[in-house]
Image (cartoon, rainbow, N blue to C red):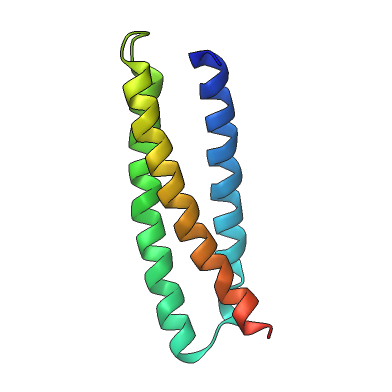
Length: 98
């Protein structure tokens, strides 16, 4: 896959994940007690991951044809870490509904 297509796919994935985080944040009131404290911690961590992901995506987009493979790898690692954090956040609602 070429850099342009990867960039477009990555941007769409990022936008989708950020939208889902906003949706989960809006459900914060459904989480109570100690679980809410953990939820807030995960949100804070996830926002830091989001900032790193954005920075890595920016580097990827601005990279030259020669460099983009390296920056793609870094971006992929950030995306994986971000998705793990997102899944952790989503699990609060799965656990709450049991």
